Length: 289
Image 1 (cartoon, helix red, strand yellow):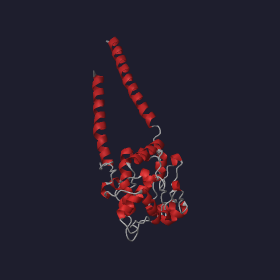
Image 2 (cartoon, rainbow, N blue to C red):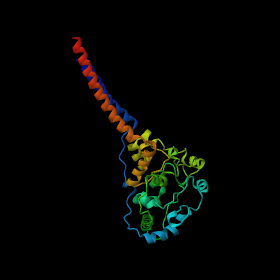
Image 3 (cartoon, rainbow, N blue to C red):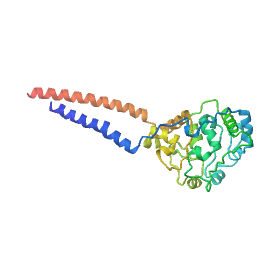
Image 4 (spheres, rainbow, N blue to C red):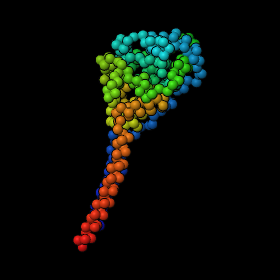
């Protein structure tokens, strides 16, 4: 009976730590923030219906290929990575998959006002303009022209689903390394540090240090989790963002399934061992008395 009392005390204090202390500590280390907003409500909605054919023409006339490549359409990047890094601070993305991985509303807002869409108003202003120039239109209806460009980007997006690593490469690799998978940033490190103010972290183990929940809200809106950070809002749609997090988990937590399976087996073993030990104790003391 004494042993059962001891066991009850151990269970009680374990429960207090697990359901009381640990959640409190978690709430202090990771304060609750609003969930990810994949509708990007703060950017508004461009209600215009885009025309992909007109968008292709507007895309060229607006000079987008002066910075961006569209390799799927035979438009190579105008600069190599070293030159682009020196010119812009970060390598401009190839837009071949932009229509597939970025949210439609985000793309429209990004074209019109990059600083606002990326939520980096605290970093860029009139005295230090953002390297991406805002699109002011070609003389027609600005919202319609923007909608046409977005429609064009969506029309050239890959039909075949992208794998997780490709989505990560298109969305994150310009700034971040994942050395565990031998994936290195495409931007020159010196230029990137000057552009960001600090060198963006290697993401190999970020899934273990921050967790999927934190990363989901952080990628969607970094300012929610880390006010004043230089990291811009990425603007991925929900599917693409989940793929980025999934890739980070594959690289940084390859043994997750195996570890969880072993945990259940270990708990089962401990329960069985406890029952056998108690039965053995009862048998021994019965013989003594």
